[in-house]
Length: 190
Image (cartoon, rainbow, N blue to C red; front, side, top):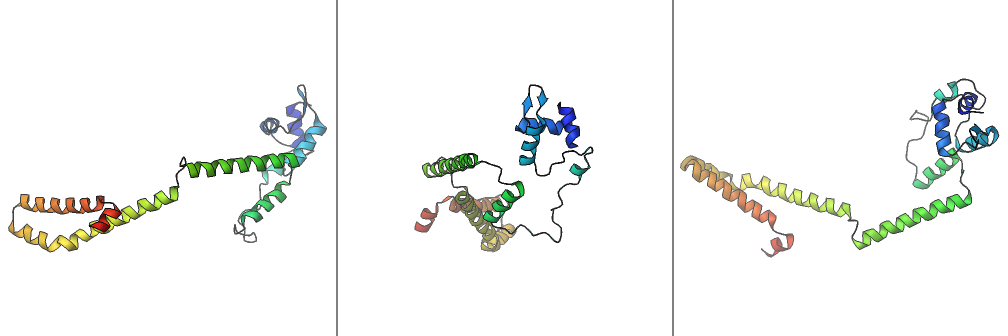
């Protein structure tokens, strides 16, 4: 049986059959599809099999397990989610495949932990927190300029020239920037 006939048998498009072939679900004998073996793979891997249907109506119904009022919200733990996924999709892996997946996952986890400890991967949350603290410190210092120096600037604006006023404002800004550029340890000593 060729791919077009197999697609008609299952009520799907030829493109879907090509995807099944790419996934390794189809067993072929040369250019022809071994129907029995391929159907066994499809029933093993595919959630809903539409074997024998002549229309694709069964495939258009979609998943009805969306966020309807009767369905649970996503408050499950990771273990419950994993268990639900396994029951929905069926535990289709052999023991050796599952062991290989587990070992690959553990190897990747160990590699990530090594990279963290060796400094190759940086602890991003610590850096985000540090930058957030610095921005907070800068914001607080800049907001304090107006009440701290406002009265003096007001009197300068009334009694001095524009260049003296601009110089005074620049001095205040430079002072604030100098204070902000100090490290926390230097600031504690000052």
